[in-house]
Image (cartoon, rainbow, N blue to C red; front, side, top):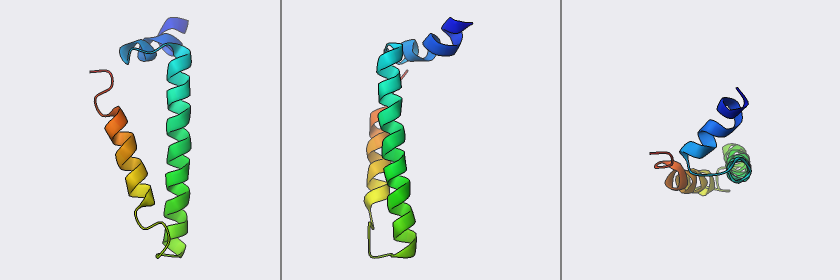
Amino acid sequence: MIDRVFLEHPRKVEESYVEHAAFAGRFAWRLLLAAGAAGVHAVIPCLFEKTASKIVGELYAKTHNRGR
């Protein structure tokens, strides 16, 4: 059970649990930054015009082939 819950997925992307936790934590932080930029942009459209989409594009580039 512990193996399935905590270790199976990190192995699929060829990472240890700690490596995967660090990667996912950085990913979450970048998503929070993108969300903040998008929120500010919603109120003040001249600010952060491409920031959120740039961050999302970078994250996609890093993850779209993981685990294949």
